[in-house]
Length: 588
Ligand code: ADP
Ligand code: MG
Ligand code: ZN
Image 1: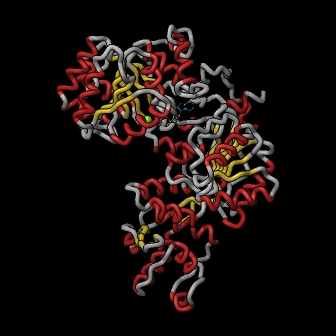
Image 2: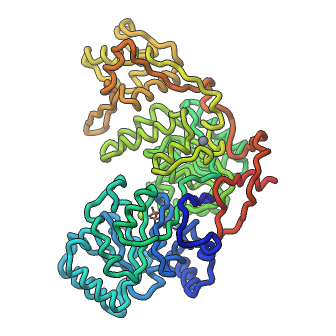
C-alpha cells in the first residue's frame, strides 16, 4: 500500500533517521531476509513491516497500528526467530493464541502457550524453558490474566530476564489497555508491571484500531516512555471504490463488458456468494470470451492450487471466487476486484477489495449491491453474535451516497478522516452532483401500512414479498387493500433498505430444520411515522442505470491538472507518502 500516515509527530526521530530503518544495513539484516524466505516462506515485506522489525531489533519500544490482515504478527515473530532467547506475547484470546501456535508449528517455529486451561505439567515445562539457555521455544504466548495472577510466571520471567533470555515483549491488541478504547480488558491494565520489571526489554504494542488518545493512554498504562508509533493508514489511495446497484438480470453482462473493455487483458477477481454462484458466474463469463475460472472451498486442493497458480502467472485472467480465495494471495497487479455480492462486513470488504492494486498502480473495487443478497447473507450470519450488525454496516456502506466511501471506512476503522484523503477516488465524491435528496415520508408510511395489514392478517412477509406487495403484485385480496407505489422496483428496494438501516423496519428470523427464513417487521422507529410532522428523506441516484457514471481509477480527471504533485519515489523500501496521485504521475 502506498499510504503511510505521518499524522503523529515522532518525538525521537527525524525523517531521515527513520528511513534508515527501512534499509538493510544492520547486523541482523541478512538473517532477517533469510528467515523471511526460509521460515516464513514470504517473498517480501509489506509496508512498515521491515521498519518495525528493524526498530524492534534495535531495542526501541514501538506501537504499530495497522489494519487487520496486513501482517502485524510478523513484526514480532520474525524478530523472535532472529533473537537469542524468547519473546513473550500477550494475547487477549485463547483462540488467537491457538491459531498462531498452529501456524508457527506448520512453519517449524517452536512456540508455546500458557493460559487458564494449561495443564500443570505443561506449565512446568514452559516455565523451565524460560531459563534454559538453549531456549526450547522462540515464542511464549500468554493471556494477560496469567501475568496478573501468576507469581510463579513473573518469577520465571525475572530469572529469564536476568539471564538475558527475555528478548522482547509483544502486546497484541494493545488498545485493550485503555478504557477509552472499544475493547477494554481489565487485566491489560496491569501489564505495566512488565516494563517496570524488565526495563531493558523492548516492547511492541500492536493494534488495528487506536486513536492517538487511546495510544497515549496505553503508553501510560504499559509504562513505556515515548515509544515510536508507526501507523499505516487504512487508506489505499490508488483504489477507486464504487458501488453499483445490482439488477440481477443485467449484472453479469455488465460485469462481462467491464472486463472486456475497461480491464482488457488485465487480471482481477470476481467475488461471489456461493460455490454455485462461482460456477455459474464463471461459465457466464466464459461464454463471453473471458478466461475466467471458479474457485471455492469445496474444490479439490490440486484444482485450487492450479487455478491460483495459473492466475498468478497470468494464464487465467479472472478468478470467480468465494471468500475461500484469500489466504496467501499476494498478486501485485490485480487491476479489479468486483464483488458480485456484497461482503458480510466492512472488515471483510476492506480485506477482499484490498487485494487489488498491491503494486500501488490504480485499480478498481466495485460492488454490485443487490436487494435480495442482503437477506441471503443475513441468514448465513444469523448465528454470529454481531453478524447482523456488521452486515448492516456493510449495507449502509453500499447505500449511503451522502458521504465519501473512504470516510465511511475511516469511521469504521476509528481513523481520523480528512476529506482530502479521497481525491475523487470514489463514486460518491465523483458524482455528488448526480444525486438528489428525495422526501420518502409518504413511501415509508405506505410500507408501514402494508406490514400492519399483513400483521393483522397474521401473515409474515419476506423482503421480496414486501416489495412485490408494494409494487402491486401478489394476491388480489391484498392488492385491493394497499396503496401501491409509483416508484420503480430498484427505488422501492432502496427505500426499504433505508428503512431497515434506520430502524423503521427490522428483521425477524424463523428457523426450520432446512432453512432460515427472513421476514420484515416493523422496527422501533415505525411509530414515529404516525406523527404528521415526522419526515424522512434520502439521497437517490438520478439515473436508473445503477452506477452514477462510468468512471474508474483509470480515468484522469482533466480538471485536476493544475494541482501540483509531489514526486513519487518508487522504491520498495520507502513507500510513497499519502496524497500523491500515483496514477497521474505515472502517466506524465
Ligand atoms: P494482522 O495481525 O495485522 O491482522 P496477520 O499478522 O494475522 O495480520 O497476517 C495476516 C496475513 O498476512 C497472514 O496470512 C500472513 O501470513 C500474511 N502476511 C504477513 N506478512 C506478509 C508478507 N510480507 N507478504 C505476504 N503475506 C504476508
Ligand atoms: Mg493480529
Ligand atoms: Zn470519496
